[in-house]
Length: 277
Ligand code: LIP
Image (cartoon, rainbow, N blue to C red; front, side, top):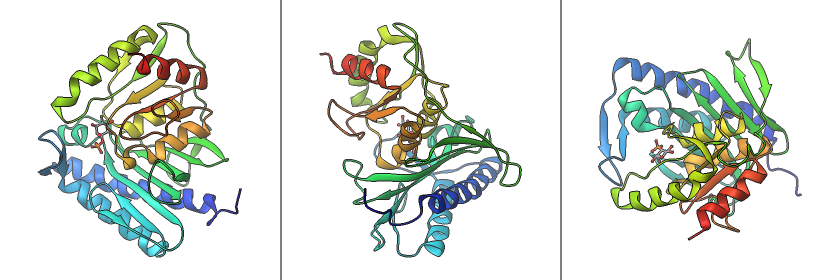
């Protein structure tokens, strides 16, 4: 493996600091009242003024600290860099929850090496911060995955580990449904194929939290179609560093077609069930 372009430990510390600062801003704006600023790909696909403000804060802090890096954000788009590192950012993942006041949303910040395409990139550091719980999930490629509770000073850190396969009809699984109603029939058919593996289903509404909870063993597995790169860039690394597998269609990487995340044995069972037609 070639030498990293930057020290991943420096990158994850920067991602963690900024995620906490951005999460505090998102929480303040939530308390002040949230306005929907626009709709995007479908009526249900909303963006709030806070999404845009939080991403602007993240983008400016990263540019100040690492001006040669690239950026890919949900709300402000892509900016190439010259360092070989690109930051992939979802300022508020779980925007619909955020707009409705459901306390399940997260700031997701990942540093990737290579072209900012989930089909080929190598994530090397990631942070997912959930303002409602104050939990910060982090990972460095090859360095493990952790959850941090408390602020920078009294940070209590615990290692993360995915669950073993709980056996047939024993898995607590999470999934999601696209904003476009035309995709719902396919999403429900996929869910029906997976149900024999499930003890129950959760629909948390934030892919970054779904992935962090798989890494933490709070979910046995997660699958969803239709995600954007910023939804899963950090969470996928956290799952892998917690001993899990993350992929898509058989032989594929996670992407818009499909993401599956679980411990290795359940991952294979999920992929087989989803792929069965
Ligand atoms: C959301 C994902 C969620 C998915 C939603 C949406 P956003 O991201 O986190 O898992 O089901 O459709 O894509 O739009 O809140 O950043």
